[in-house]
Length: 138
Length: 138
DNA sequence: ATGAGATCAAGAATTATTCTAAATAAAAAA
DNA sequence: TTTTTTATTTAGAATAATTCTTGATCTCAT
Ligand SMILES: [Mn+2]
Ligand SMILES: [Mn+2]
Ligand SMILES: [Zn+2]
Ligand SMILES: [Zn+2]
Image 1 (cartoon, rainbow over the protein chains, first blue to last red):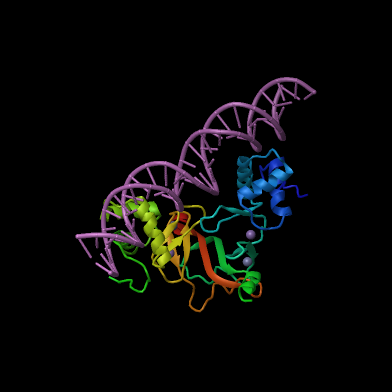
Image 2: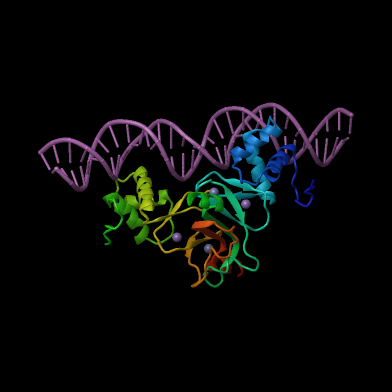
């Protein structure tokens, strides 16, 4: 159990722990707040949806989880702190983490005016995952 | 004036034309639906917000404009049909189109399982535009 | 001109999320 | 430990972008 003492004025309460554990323990499927809420209730029946929203925001600000937005859908949450992008399969609607090839710089492919400062990169790929792509071509 | 006859069962009505023209004529600043509504009213005072939403959806489906989503903000709309990504300046909050360097393939930098089929790529860069970056370092 | 089907307009409904305010829990002080 | 202070949780109300509903209006092919 990590102690999170390096995260400044951040208090790891029971509820925040439960919400965090839901994300790290269970399959890394990038659940929405409502899905996190349902899973969290199994571990702590009294927890409220408002608290799940609060916790997810706090954890996101603390840098322990990432908020993932795909188009206009409900935000999803991800405990993978390594820099990565997301692949969304339009068939099974699953979200997969993807990483840049070693030594590749995803920002370098973009033509940017001299003097631009890049703070953050947000990438989503859409298509069919190998399983669904194969199922479509039987 | 393009005639759009190649776009199937698509009827370019007065309202759709106004909405489309707002996007192509005026500065390409990626307005939201409400902003498009305000500008469209200057050209056609009776137009309704519902119709602006309808038109934007129709135009998007017809492939004449692109819907651009940045995090959870209101969708923005873009008439630039060339493949491109977006740069969002956190200082002036403007959205800029950016293009891949010639011969660079933005998908190629990502490690994907064998057999994945990519249909679409969505990229947003965030940071400071040259003007704002300079203003910050006087 | 007429009728079928598409489009528009006004407002209601939806939905994810945020806000509010009171209750509770945890930390700090005494 | 008891008290005091502060942060957090909770339930429900409020918000905001978007979608839906329905009747009116327009367009186009007959
Ligand atoms: Mn992820
Ligand atoms: Mn654009
Ligand atoms: Zn799939
Ligand atoms: Zn700027």
